[in-house]
Length: 124
Image (cartoon, rainbow, N blue to C red):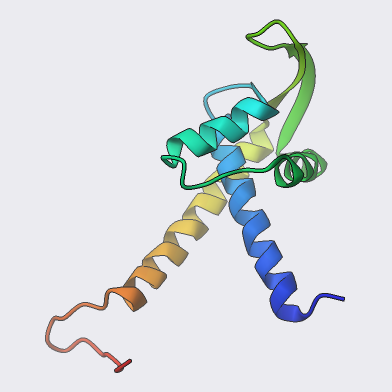
């Protein structure tokens, strides 16, 4: 049974992947393999998305109503499932992006504290 730390860690990872998927779908419908490749490409290959993480995330996003799926033909003439951002998903993307920005700014303040006079700092 995972402890509280492990459960929170998984939720953070899932939430981050969800955000990246929603953002990747913003320009239009895309199939799963292309979503993973777009995340890898746009992160300069820093972020690798494994199928074992991607497809459960896609199913979770469908369940939330943030994306929809339909069958189609990929660029290499193969049958594939294409995922599309829904109106609800667009709202969620805006909300999650705002949350992410706040978290990133807070972490940046801790990692790179301002050296200006009057700034409260603690020694490490």
